[in-house]
Image 1 (cartoon, rainbow, N blue to C red):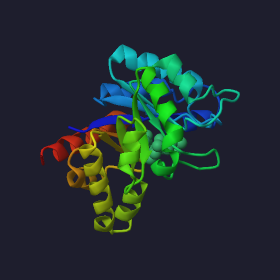
Image 2: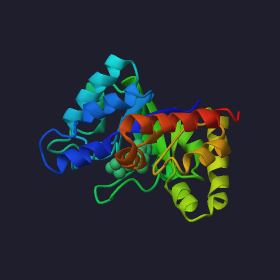
Image 3: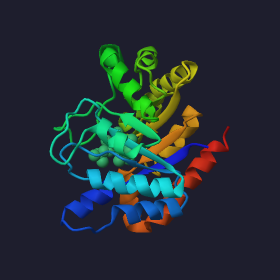
Length: 253
Ligand SMILES: CC(=O)[C@@H](O)[C@H](O)COP(=O)(O)O
Ligand SMILES: NCC(=O)COP(=O)(O)O
């Protein structure tokens, strides 16, 4: 079955809007794990607009105590600055099970593309090796249609398919137009020996059709929609609904 890693960035957005410690990112992560989530994801940004280095430390401790996976996402090329030690240093301090490298810039509202592997492969090779040297599985954020052979040559263990275009196509009522590129990229990654994760704008509405079409997805990381849906239904019931979707999708195979 595909595993669910809940991204708690949005809890930190709410907390930071007022200063102080509420809502508590660790307590929210605990609730997700109590409901059965398989892991926790964070994507700290260098401008510390939501998840802070101290959150990363606290969540590393929680996930270690609970024996579940911690996934840290970020741009490995972004230099350290006040309040952000850099992705490699964060991983050195906290040793997450997985690091997901994402080529996002400060000016981006959110992640909106994967790596151009053919162009960035040589720069990625030593970085991927450094993260793997810390004991982290390395996943590389990838567009549908990405050059999988170059991702493999960069040393990746997995790719994470950037699913923003899937969510947009689903919303527009044209899901079938978007799916073939995802299906063939996932298939190519598997054939190259890479694992396949997926994330960005996945939701209760669009998740099942994606998983059923792709078949073999190791992990989805979901934050924005899940935290939004939890406003209506509660965090634990919402996580359980996602788990039910994952179970139902797995029953197709
Ligand atoms: C890589 C990815 O798709 C997510 O991590 C997304 O970037 C979440 O980050 P924000 O919560 O800052 O939008
Ligand atoms: N890697 C994707 C992720 O962690 C969550 O993305 P989103 O659900 O907040 O769009």
